[in-house]
Image 1 (cartoon, rainbow, N blue to C red):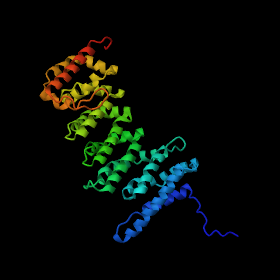
Image 2: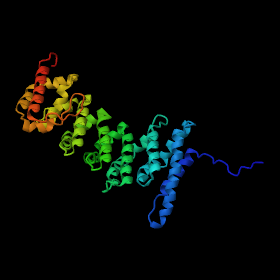
Image 3: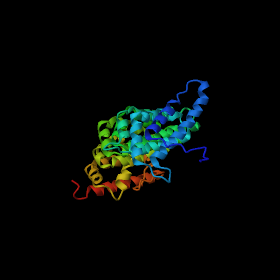
Image 4: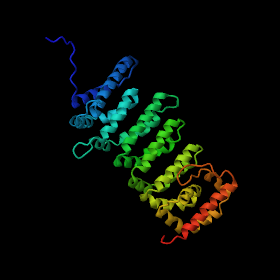
Amino acid sequence: MSFSFFKPSRPKTPQELVRAIKDSLLALDTKTVAEVQALKKALEEVEKIFLAMRVMLCGDGEVEPNLDQVSQLALEICKEDVLALFIHKLPILGWEARKDLVHCWSMLLKQQVGSTCCCVEYIENHLELLDFLVVCVVLYYSNSVDDYDNKEIALNCGNILRECIKIPTLAKYLLESPSFELFFKYVELPNFDIASDAFSTFKDLLTKHEDAVSEYLTAHYDEFFEEYEKLLSSSNYVTRRQSLKLLSEFLLETPNSHIMKRYIVEVRYLKVMMTLLKVFVANPNKPRDIKVILAKNHERLLALLHNLSPGKGKSTLIMSFAANYCFTESCADDDQFEEEKELIIKEIERVSRLPNLE
């Protein structure tokens, strides 16, 4: 005769777990003060179910996840439109639930069922979810920079976005979306943590997928660099520094060589060009493409440099960084400026005399 009054509950199947997740998320739709207590209980239930989802996807440290169950879970989440609920309900979830959701999101995007990643395919068919995530960065940031919960929600959205950006089709959509323009403002938000997180997302969009970025920059050259110029001229030193470093990174990517050739010889970007020349010229391991550009345009570049006075260029060269891309505070006086300029001139002259650069 058994004296056990409590039997361990039977683990939920993927279908049962997804139904429980969906029901618990839908229960968060509270509209009146009278429903606050019910909302609190619903949030507690969501935390428990999200933990169960994380265990099914990742295991519990002792038992490895069942791959068939993981695949079925991913399929059911897409079938029941729970992936969209994850995004739309994220702002009202508690801290633990959001943490588990961010972790599970990464796992779900990687889950391949047959020949496709069903969760990636779902997002490709519901691309408005990406726009919602971008808007959430500020929508739930609020006017109060001291609002901890809102700040954390913005950071959660950033983490989920960066997981999506790893997928070429999703990154391409964001580049072409009007939402992309918001990042030029987000990177200068007054909250340092959110601005830094937004810049990380901005950087991933411009560096993760070279071909997509090249296509975007080719089609939107003028409007992109018009906005980017504002970042390079920002009153915020950190914004200027990060933007300049990022500019050198994506311009030097091989598919963007035609963008770099166009950018570096444009007089309207002379100030930025002077700063970049410190990178292109001083780097002892310059790629051949850089040497060719410097050689072909050496006469024009030298003319511009010879006519550049300290008053015109000193403010930009203060932000110059050496070949290892570390920023310096050199050029604090006119003599230093002239030394920097002379260094660049001599190197351009030397490169222009190198053989086999036709």
